[in-house]
Amino acid sequence: MPRKLPALNADNRAFWQGGKDGQLLIHHCDACRRFFHPPSPICPRCASFDVKPRGVSGKGSVASFTVNHQQWTPELDTPFVVAIIELIEQPGLRFLSNVIGCDPLSVSIGMRVHVTFDNVEDVWLPLFEKDQ
Image (cartoon, rainbow, N blue to C red; front, side, top):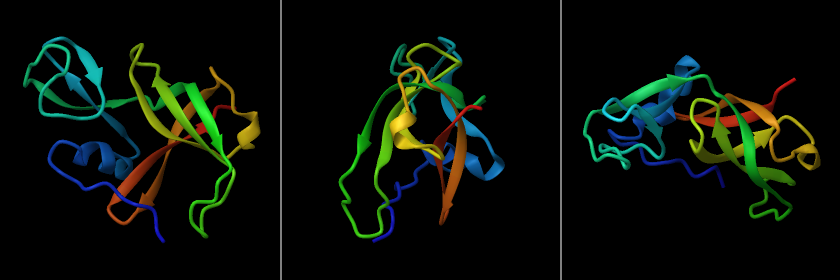
């Protein structure tokens, strides 16, 4: 069973397809000058419609995480890390992802990470690797 992919729409397309160009695109409100996630046509902070995707560095840190040992489907490799990543651009700018490319038991809160992308069909999944 392949990975479930998000349904693309006008609001989230940039986020899920920015990896094609190596960019992590997060919605930004020009009115209050804040990033927000998940993407939406209206700013959740000030209700402005003056929002659009903007490239960020892709650098951040692990705010929280869990190591999953349950093999939910036969092709799923375990253990794997599910983490809340906080991007450096703004305190509180967080989203859920996976930390890959390292021993899952070496992941820690505060660990610095950077984005990488896994292309599946027409989606580029933002995943994170430990900074060296």
